[in-house]
Length: 149
Image: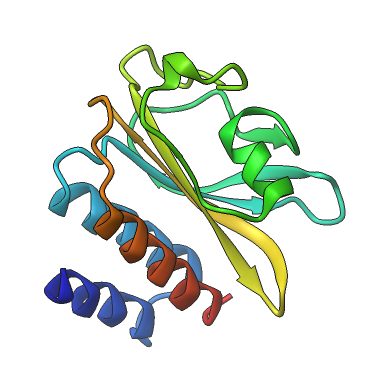
């Protein structure tokens, strides 16, 4: 995991790419390196609105380009300000289905100056794949991402 952190840091610190390109490269790297990450993307607060707007992502296209606060797992994290791990989306009543293949989801908020400004959202085609190590990596990553936003 430390090797993956080094590679992620290298992307985020690269002077050659703008923020959007860096976030897209982060999504690609996570998608390539962690086999059960089947959709990896960022959502960000949409201006002054209580909604999220889709940012860079890797995976199947999604209809969920705008998510109101409180709707789905991403919308819940925008309100709760806490990481949300869903081992089995079938058990979650407030789940917004992006793909029939999605079995699990993890969403980690990104904070800038104490405000929740976005999140990383990862879907998996495997039930209950996410480990504590995954959660720690993603929370570290969101902290690092906030530095370039």
